[in-house]
Image (cartoon, rainbow, N blue to C red):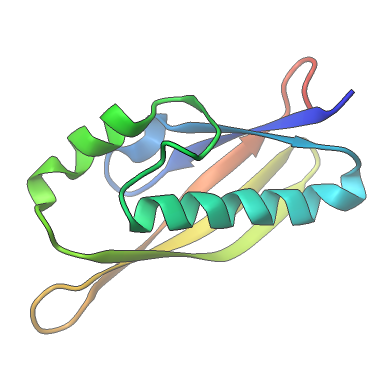
Length: 119
């Protein structure tokens, strides 16, 4: 039976409610699987479309609400790292907004938590 992972995205602003789910098979594959999901999340956030990211909570409507006041300012979201620690993993994401003058950069995290019958 595949195991699943749940991420909680906890950025500096209000994206804290987004959850992601991912299936994986063994602890050796967990690192690669969580890195792939973090990459999928970063790509979706970059284009402001998380419809194809396996979210277990939150979702596209929540992301749209959070980013509504930002307008069309382009952003790139990249994965800096994914660290596994027992029943949790943390993906560190860097947001870079193409603002006039210097780009605006900050980091956020997506936390993977082990569930009762998951992972």
